[in-house]
Length: 412
Image (cartoon, rainbow, N blue to C red; front, side):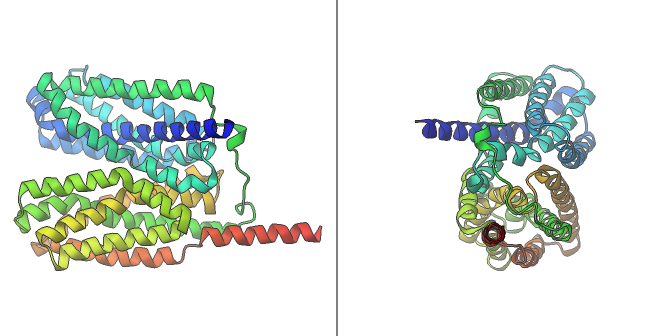
């Protein structure tokens, strides 16, 4: 009975942590683009102002990717993650109340910082509730919270807008965020994150040399940078490529977008399950292969059918990929410093996405075609596969460490 109750508590904790990402990413970052025209009518701002605010939002996200990782070494990660959700909820409510665009822009920038602070230390929090053998699966599911947020806002925002005004949208989602925080607070009081049953024993990290650790961090940082360089432009320019160059319908574009969103809701669980069973390295390789095939279809043979298949392959691999890296860091580099290291790699992801989006725009201007962007993504995926092949297999490392422990016990 206790074992079953323990599993229920673990699953409930994972569900709540997923909802944190749904709030800070799906609500905090994705509502604004949906209602910019309505807000523009109220305040009369220009799209230059929108560009400035979104750029500052991204800067805050990048900055707190690093800062929140460092803070996790000094402050309880649970406090950082749950506090970011509460602050994000307050910002959402205030956005619907204040009557000044500059103040709204400031609140939106804060939500960018909250998004990073809710995700980077998440690996520490998950490690205190989830057994080590299920870490990848849990992180994969939690990383899909963005898809759930986008899916929910896609239905709720138009419905609320038809019944009320745009201010109500922010207030409703802010209240939802604070309700989720209150549920988490009640749960945490009953099942604190430092539950002794969830504390795992350090495996191979104490015996890893500093050089070996630095090499692994470098490999993961390169993977994250290249991921941002390829994956974000893929998503950003997909619909423009379909509509402007391939001359496909808006309806088909919406269908592809729905496929990506719906599959994103399960991709984390799928990729995480593969990682827990086959190793994280193999799951990463599968993810990169799927993106490679998806990009190649768009470059070499873009038809209605292949575009749909491309969206399907991208949806399966895209969102699930982001939960694998923190899981690998925790298992193979360091449990104690996992959030701090992930903060550095997440910063690399953000920089890669910014550079990739910028260079892709230049590529379209210079060549007059979006297709070369997807050819470049194919090349980057090959580089990702090459780097991933050199990652150490965590199951082999665990087995080797177990053998070392047996030898030590035998000699003593």
